[in-house]
Structure formats: C-alpha cells, structure tokens
Image (cartoon, rainbow, N blue to C red; front, side):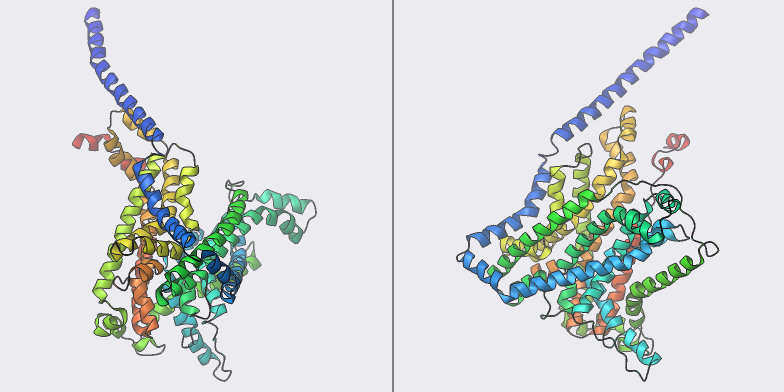
Length: 589
C-alpha cells in the first residue's frame, strides 16, 4: 500500500515537471523580450520618425531664414522697427498682467482647498480642468455674449440701474484680452496651488503659533517660502501661455493689439509675405527659448513630493464661521465669473436672434442648416461636423497609439534626453510650426493631412507625458505573474495591461480630441479655406456678425466639451477582479 502511494506521488511529480518547465521558458522569453525592447528603445523607427515629423518643419524654417538673401539687413531692420518693440511690449505686458491676476485670483481659493476639507471638494477639483477642454474660440464667444456691448452683463446693469447709464465697454481691447486669459488660466493655478498648499504640514503653523508668531508672520516666513517655487513656476507657465496667445488676441484685439503669433498669421495669410513671417517666427523662437530656460529653472525648484498626507480639518460654520462665509462668497464669485459666460451662451441660443429678453425659440439652431450658414462659413453644417469629428477621432487615435507604444517601450528607462526631445514641442510656437510645415510640404500634401500633422504635433507632448507616467506607475509585477503563468505577450496586453491602463488611455484620448477640436491656428493657416472645423466656423460667424448662429454652434461645442470632460473624469481605475475572471467564470469560458 505504501509503495503504491509513493509510486503515485512520483508519477504526479513527473506530470508536473513539464508544466513547470514550460512556465519557466515562457517567463524567460518574456524577460528576454523586455530586455531587447529596452536596448532598442532609443533607436526605434517610430521614435525616429516622430522626431523627424516634429522638428523637420522648424529646422526647415530656420534654414530658409538663415540662407535667404539679405537676412542680416531684414533681421536688423525688424529688430529696430517700431512694430517689433510694440509687439514685444504688448505681448509682455498682457502676459504679466494675465499671470499676476490669475495667481491673485487663485490664492484665496488655494488657501481653502489646501487647509480644509469640505463636501464636494473632489468634484470641484476635478471641474478645474474643464477650461482646458474648452477651445479658445468658445471662450471668446462666451466673453462676447456676456461682457460684450450688447451682452448679458450690460443688459442686467440697464435693468438694475436704469438711471445710472453704467456699461462695460472694455472687452475689445487690452483689458478684455486679459479678462479672457484669466478666465482660461486661473482654475489651473487654483488647482496646482491648492495641491501645493495641502502638502504643507499644519504642524509647522501650530509650532509657529506656540512660539508666539502671528498669522501674518507665519504666512511670510513659513507658508510663502514653501509655496514660492510653485507660484513662480505657475507664473512663468501662464506668462508663456499668454505670450503665445492667438485666438483671444486675434478676435478681441483685431489689428490694433498683436502678439507675435497674430503678427506671423497676418504676414503669412493676409499680406502673403512668407519670408517676413518666417523671420518673425525665428525671432519669437529665440525669445521663447529664454522664457523656457527660466521656466526650467523654476521647475527644478518645484517640490514634487508631499510632506503631509494626513487628514485636514473639516470646514464647518460652527468651528470656522467667518472662514466659511468667506469661502462661500469666493465660490459664488468664481462661479459667477466662470459659469456666467458659458451659461449666457447656452441661454441666449434659445432666444430669438440671440437677444436677452426675446421669445424662446429654436430658430437659431434651424439657421445652422440654412444657406446663410453655408455662405458665412463656406461649408454646410453637416460637412463642418463631419470634418471636426473625423479630425478629432483620427488625431486622438494616432496620438494615443503612438504615445502609448513609446511609453511601453521606455517603461523601464528613467526620464532622460529621449523623453525631453518628445516634450520640447511644448515650447515651440504652434503658428511657427504651422508656418514651417506650410513652407516645407504645403505644395505637396493635401490640406487635411497637413492639419493632421500639425495637430499631432500639438497634442503629442501632453498625451505622451500622461501615458508615460501612468505606464511607469502600473509596474511589472502583475505582467510578470501573467507571463509566469504561461500567457503570451499579446494575451498579457489584451487581458491585463490594457484594462488596467484604460482610465489613462481614455483621459489621454479626451485631451487629444479636445486639442483637435479647439485648434484654430493650424486650420486657418494650413486649411486654405478647404477644411472648416467647428472653431473656424464660429470664428467666421463672429466675423460676419451672425451671432445667433455662432451662439447656437457654441452651445453644441459646450456639450461636446462636457462629454469629453465626463469621459476623462468618469472612468475609475478597474479593480483586479474586473481584469482577472473568477475561477467559475474561467471554467465557463
């Protein structure tokens, strides 16, 4: 009997050995495959092709400018001209005001977000990324509808103060441009400053109070020095965004107020002076290099890690009555400032001729399907929707696919020079890139392919950064466990890796689609009037003073932006039981 049992054990062991050998060989194959990927990451054809696509138009533009006849005379004449100094002065002044006011408006809210916990805090923090899902032309439309001469704000002032004659008339000018920039950037400053403030340990403030220091002294000697790197980084970042402003300045500034982006567009598209536009683009490129160097210095001092991860005190009226009242007033002000322009666009789209106080109607939406819309825009409503949707889906698919492929390829590599080359397009002017692309391939490639190329350049750096970080945080333990169980690389990708990466991929796709839908510069410069997207349609409707149709189309744009926002924020990280089936489910399969 015992011999029989021993013989059974030996036979059972012999049956298991081949399976163990296969699992070991599968794991070794997975390890060798990963090592081979890591060795060839920097020489991968996809990586090299992307670098060529990103930098060839810019290099072609620089070479064309340097080799042109009379380059030194043209450059010297432009740098000494009144046009250069006026453009530089306006660009720097409006960027300084925009960055400073954005931070000043964000600081009170950052205090409450960083020092207290309250209901709806997570939802509000998520909603702060919504402005980045809104295209610049939609922000301009909201500003016009709410703050314009015949806007909702002046309508309310006339009703509340009929005898005073109060009116807001500063939209079309310097302060209107700053108002639009602050609208676009302050929630971004609020979120990052609040997160930095939240990482400061409250014990530091308690120790300062125990030592007899007052609130102002604690703020000046403890809080402000700890927040200074974040504030400096955000200031330079918003300054850079405002310095490169195109859509807001083009619509609200006209030809009187010009950034270098608008000046390049005017020289290229209106005056057809391509060499002059290339020269201005080169000058702006060197100016941006200086700003990016300052931003990089500030970014090195930015504190990445957190010092405090404990719980914050809840903000209750019983414990903090005055602070609760101030926070509610701040929320009301921010809600009015941010939501009123968008709400005015939606509300006035249902009024006759888009006028406040008119009869409710759907006439504005019906006008989108008429010949008047086609005459003003150059394309029918269905073709505009088809072009916008097709471009957005294609850009999202290509950008996410290429970015995730490279993120997987470099998942074991530390952040280095290879990643930096994929991030540098963030510091290249989009109008400059479009100018170089037009000079390089404008007569060879069709307009749709040129726009696709330019929008891939626009969206790729942020999408790659998001997916690179998410893929590194995923780790390799689960994938190695699946390989040890005998799963092939393709099966691991389909059943383990992609389900776990689904939230990051959805967010990246939403951002890429939002970049494509909101792009105005590339379509105006490279579309040659043949490609009309939603942003271009709204721009042309505003230019033809067809505000009822522009408002209706802007409302549809707001709905699309909300869908993208919900797609980005509504995806939760999948649970392991959603990735790996339960034993009974596996048996059923």
